[in-house]
Amino acid sequence: MTDRSVPQHFRAFDAWRFVAALAVMVFHFSAYDMEGLASLRFLAHRMQQVIDLFFILSGFVIMTAYSDKVRSLSDYRNFLVRRLARIYPLHLLTLGFFVCLALAGLAGIVPVGNWQRYDFSTLPAQLLLVHAWGVMPELTFNYVSWSISAEWMAYLLFPCIALMNRKAGLWGLALAFGFAAMAVEALTQVGFIPEERWIESATYGAFRALPSFVLGCGCAVVVTRYRLPVTSLLPGLVAFVATCLVMLPAPPAYVILAGFGLAMVLTASAELNNPDCSRIFRHFELMGRASFGIYMLHPVFASFFMALVWEHFLKASGLVNFYLYMAIVGVLVIAGAVISMWLIETPLRDLINRRFAPAQSQAPEPRQAVPAMATVEKVQPVDAA
Image 1 (cartoon, rainbow, N blue to C red):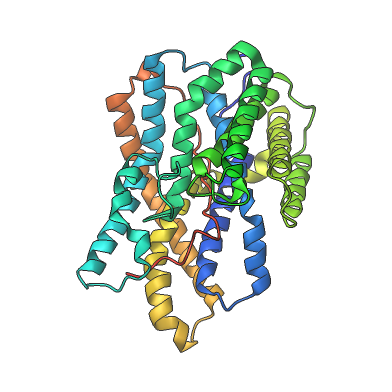
Image 2 (image 1 turned 90 degrees about the vertical axis):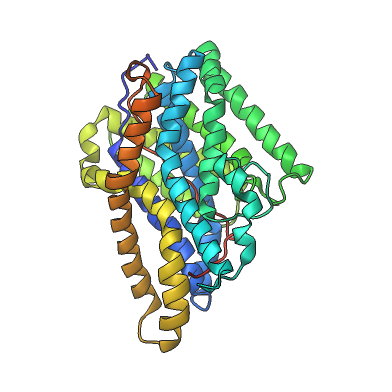
């Protein structure tokens, strides 16, 4: 993007990523306390569309980093390598964990229920990152990985989106958004997407993510070319909170997307116009970088600490408050995510990039947007080891 210089790291977005990852983790952990507050479960169900903010964020950071850098097949190849290097190692690691868990269950070593989650026939789709493309009826293995499958479709289509921006600017992106929205609406109307509201779909999450991803690309263009005269993060925060409140009565999807798009444009514009306004978030950088690990690893921790330790030992004893225990496990997840980032994700990403993406073709690596949480209808508590 050449109109104005735009940094690829927004400190406020680090906080968004971290808070979102925590929200996803709490949402899934709370499924182990079905006798708890009904109002909390209702709120979690209604607020699940907050995840589409992060498909928007993904479009924003990818457009910011790569809009002028994917012009040839070689550029395209290197772009895909770099995106795979970011998301695939941890996906493969967590998938392998749940495969081993299923094998241990088959061998009678550990108790495993809900066997439809461990459908080995879905492994090819999982390995190819197409498992959220409508090829299977249920979420399997590491259920949260549906969102990186959705992201993968968006990455594959990104050169077309970038080309439309270069040829027609915002009008081209508006056309791309309209096409993606009409496609997902049509798929819902004919029953191809089984959910009544496409914004709640996970097994067809790739189609759900496209309008949001394109919208995020458009937000990046708006911030770059028509930066709003905002110098405070407050307007963006107000827009974000207002959008969350509007979600409670389950409005049309486009109301939610518009609210989050506005929040993103206001926040990014404020940080570009007045970098000091986001100094309060400077301590969130590490947590923002670890948020992808928090998101991908918390089902692994849940399979032991929740499905086994809590369900089979602590729950009946009444010795430990569930929410205190959940907080302790949450701290362990965060620590595990930081360790994973240092020892697994970053070294493997750098190795893959050095081996398969020539340095002269590399763009600075954008922060990974937090993938989305799975829907209430599709997610059950992770079965125990």
